[in-house]
Length: 211
Image 1 (cartoon, rainbow, N blue to C red):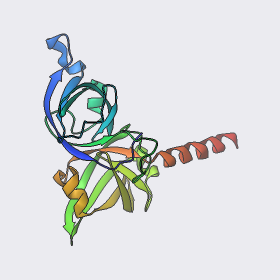
Image 2: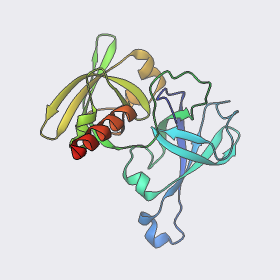
Image 3: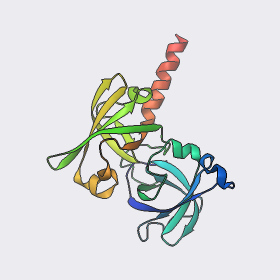
């Protein structure tokens, strides 16, 4: 369980195929080695969960300020930013006595979404994202959404034939302390919808069936 508050930006410095047969590597996952900021892993142990760009992963190797995770081909096909070297957002799993600064986040990416616009407006930035039709009903004005692991507030929802487009305001602190500032029009991002919205939708659907 996570909160969507990014606690570090790290670098994927190495990717290795997990395939045992080099002729069929496309069907296998990868082992990623991540370089974290100095001291970030001091309270991390083997087997702990860490979210990379919003995707919950298990630490399988740990040394100094580096750790490794294994990611399946299925997960690679449904996430963005984990297939090659580069910057990623990090968040350690929530502890029972931690502040819930964002909202309840599972670390399970629902789908990929696409950036339609990313422009500076005054001192902040407006990020617009096209949400796939299957998940459009879960987005609401002033509701919460997770984009690449960051808990964000939806400022506007515009429905369209392909789902909906949401508008999000990013303050300078978010730009400076996450990888969201690297986005551009056409970028694919990891999307996780609000857990509460998911359960509300299920309850309403169940009541409709009963009636």
